[in-house]
Amino acid sequence: MIVAPLLARSQKLAAWIEREVHDFPAPASLRTRCAGPCFVVAQEHHQAIIHLLNQQHPMHASAFALVRLVYESLVRGLWLQHCASEEQLRSFSCGGQPPKVPTLLAAIRKTPGYSSGQLTVVYERSWDAMCAYTHTGAQQVQRWNTCAAIEPNYSEAEVAEVLRCTGTFALISLLGLSAVAGNEALAQRALAKSQEWVQ
Image (cartoon, rainbow, N blue to C red):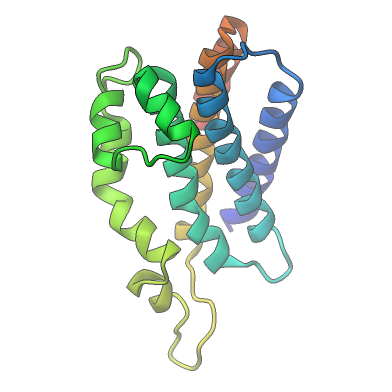
């Protein structure tokens, strides 16, 4: 069984992230007030996924539906932190819509530290599936069918993938928060934890 130990690791990771961000100081700028909550929301969704999967009867559908929300919160936070103009920040803070995800990703890719385009690769490979799980598309419906009944039919490999990728997104969001706060020590701890997480 691969899920139980990974779920335990995920719980420890989420608890570690929560301790790192508890009561940390950040400048009170509009950019911070827009980007910071996106990163924290990504982390909260990550915690919710772990909670939903760590039940006697796991709530797979809801956990899988949150994967897109973790990713989208992270991408919006990175764009607001590193790329948005002052006008775009003001618009967003007053309820305006940010650009679509591909536009956000193109801008983020021009940011030092994000030029590898890994977040774009995730989008290209997984966005349709993430949307299908969130909006009860074919992938979600297929995983509620077995030969005998309408019941959960999520594989351990799929659950493990959700835990791994959302753990990575949560760690990137912690890096985003370290940039918001100008906290190099936090960034170094987050990078070290990221290397540990992928092993």
